[in-house]
Image (cartoon, rainbow, N blue to C red; front, side):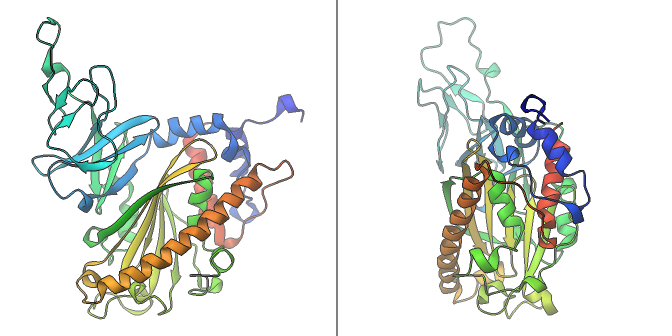
Length: 377
């Protein structure tokens, strides 16, 4: 095949997933490095599916807000005066400045450019020096609504008016782990960072625990065994696997007061990859998560958060345990940053070629299948 006959990245991806898992290889380099393929992802993935904006308990009061960007669309998420969490466009209806930035609390939404002011429901309250304009009508200048649902404590938003409700699309998650109710966990820490890798490299890194013994040799690599890792077939909306933890991290185990979980479920760590980019590590005692959005082909925006189950949060030693886990996860993130950035540098090599997948990388193959379903060849 000549250079002019080369397959597009999307066609390469479809060819990649056309084989059985037992013959599967890593995704083609082009799906990580191509700006054109990223544009396809923004249109068919990030503007199509539900994305996680964080945890509902982090917006406890009216006026508490956070901001994010979905497929180049600035989005504002807040708790309104009725106590409901809602999402709306974060762009002023006047000269189109963005409105709020970061996280915080606001009694009203005030544009930093000309002080147009919106209520917490998005309706326009007032606009200075507009009374002489006969065409000005406040009722026609409400901030556009964006679909927003709280699912299991997670704030989920989508630009797609036709996306199935999270309770429907993600019913399989609750069926899978009925005895771990994520809505009862409480986030205790959050930060954001930006790494020099493609968003899919980081997502795939989460989806497989094959890398733990080597990449995390200095931290969690010895807390589980490759031969004990289970990677079953996933769901159309998510993939998962689990590992059994030893007692080196007490917070990863069921609290002594927990009488619901029995046997191995008391030490089972679930790794849930909810498409496209919500990655949750869920244990009986704590959770941590990554929510990803691309920043060009070679960089990824990451929201990282962690929290605790209700019984561990009530334990007198909870904060000491949490501090130990936080310190551990800080080191884990440093290790993951190093490993995933090395992968992206390797993807740019002319001599690099995708290799065969291990049986422990079934979630990665299913992730590639999900992308192929979303992005036309």
